[in-house]
Length: 132
Image (cartoon, rainbow, N blue to C red; front, side, top):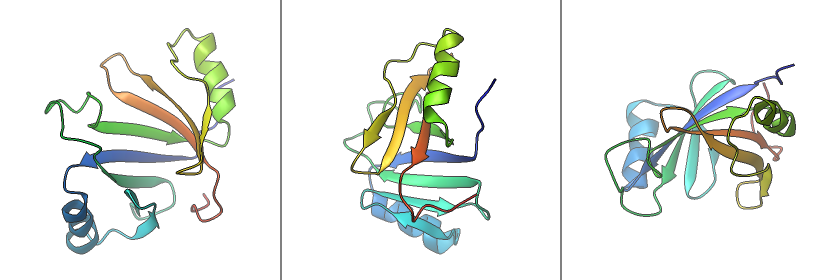
């Protein structure tokens, strides 16, 4: 049985994160949900869809959003481990097991879709993340 999906976050990576943060906050007036220092996450008028704008760790290697530092499509679920087992049983290549990140207080894993886009399944392990 497929584990539940609770929320979704699309992460964009910016060389000039401050300019992007101002754009999303001042021009689009998206509500800031969480400031993680190198990442700011905005609500898209609700509690199920979010936009994360991350400070890029280095210059973009390509204009192709499928390469590292482009776009990460994140599915938020309470059952990260269940998703890992579900996808493994279907034969999806999973280069990592679910891992806890102390820096962002999330449990997550990454994999690629057939087009080469990075997909992440994660669970926020912090009380200040918006409930569904």
